[in-house]
Length: 148
Image (cartoon, rainbow, N blue to C red; front, side, top):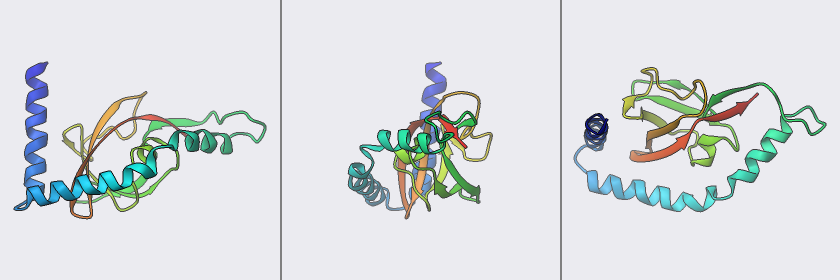
C-alpha cells in the first residue's frame, strides 16, 4: 500500500515537473499566487450550494431527486486533458475554485480521460492537477451529488 502510494506520488510529481518545463520555480510561485488571490472568493460557497439545490427543487421546498455523483463541470477532452467550459455554482468544482478555462490534466495521478472519475458511483476523494494560464495548481476535492 505505502509503496504504491509513493510510486503514485513520484509519477505525479514527475508529470508536473515535465509540464512546468524550464521555469518550475517561477510557475510554482505563479500557481501559489493565483490560488492565494482567489482563496477569499471561495470561502463561503456552502450556502450557495444549499441555495442552488433549493432552486432546483419542485418549488415547494422539496429538494430535487435526480442527481449523479460528480464535481459539477461541463467541458470536453483535449490533448492536454479535460477543458472546463462551465462550472455549476455550489458544487465541488466551484467550491474548490475551479473555473471556465481551467484544464484538468491529471486525476489522482492518472491522465484525465483514462477512466478519470469526475463522475462515478458515490463520493470519492480526488486530487486534480489543473493547468490555469500556464500555471500548475493542485486541487483536492470530493465527488458529491450533482442535481439536475
